[in-house]
Length: 218
Image (cartoon, rainbow, N blue to C red):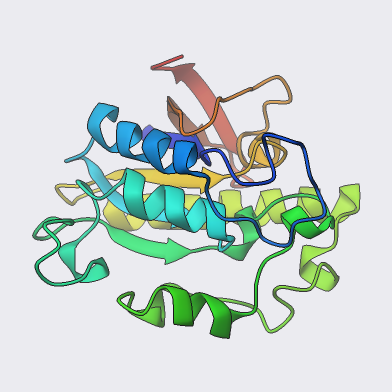
């Protein structure tokens, strides 16, 4: 089977302009919010996506929530907001695609903080290991653990693609961080700009490793 996967890097966070890595779990800047709104307008496959997987850090959560408001199901938005669509895509926060380093800017917030900031979200979107947000165990920043995270998310993507294959929305979006993109795709050279999407036709090998057949954009 060949599947269509969309990889998105988060929009500009408050740590990006001055490269301030000491900010814990930074949110988007005003420019980052604008970039996410532009993503919402420009993304070409709005009606084909059945699942949006996003890192559970503030900037990736915000990018996904704003950037895919014309794709995600309306249950993920406040009533009367005009955002979300009927029978839209599922939204899941996936800690395996969080940022790669253990710096404060790449470390998530406690789940209770996210819940207080996003009270309209149904929190079954979180499937977090108890380790999160600590950068240890499953989410440590050493190279071998990062590779293991990449392999786990590739296996999960294959499972999810198979579930969606016969539906009207067979595509998947992954909203992640610049430093982790290569672990999702296996492409060491892939670079994606802030709030930009790259689309690929992919397959999986016999070990459930992701194989890029060709790029559709960028």
